Amino acid sequence: MKIIIEQAFQTISDNFQMLKSKSTIINDIANTWIGALSRGNKVIFCGNGGSAADSQHLAAELMGRYKIDRNPMPAISLTTDTSALTAIGNDYGYEHVFSRPLKGIGQKGDVLVGISTSGNSKNIINAFSVAKQKGITTIAFTGNNGGTMKKIADIALNVPSDTTNNIQEMHIACGHIICGIVENYFFGKIK
Picture 1 (cartoon, rainbow, N blue to C red):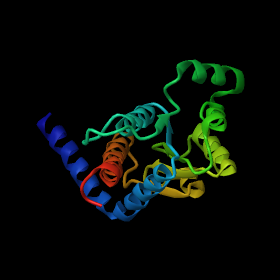
Picture 2: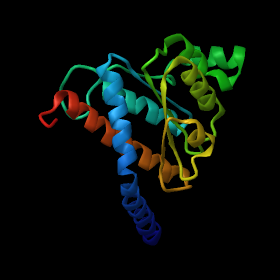
Picture 3: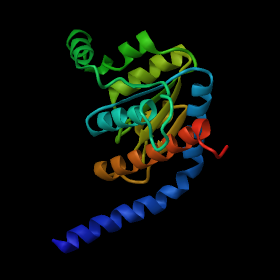
Picture 4: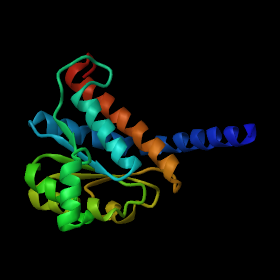
């Protein structure tokens, strides 16, 4: 069993070393969030399963705090309202659970972050379509090949793995880095 644990840690370590190659994209995403928040817009997140949890987690980092005790920054996860999710899923189909709320709350200048390990989540792809119509910047967090989301997103962060759990580990790490950059920009001492 020790071998399995050591191999898992080695895989994680190797993945994070490869993730350094995504530094420019991570910087671009941070600057995009900063731009939106500077204009008074918000960052909106969505995802399914573990990516829904990451969506909620990152929205909470902006609304609550990451490392600095400060005022909240406008962010929301479209995964948190079970009444809306189940009503929309029931009445319109699961593929519309993110696009329909985005039509209601999304505004030109907002940022939509879609998190999907495959990059092929139909409900996020539909939300990206609505975002384009409304002038909302789209950012995809996906796995290595990026799927359809890589092709249609304004910015795509395709982390270097094809394994779901490893992709999710890298997504939350990148999200934390971005939250830290954004928080420091608005509330830190380093500009």
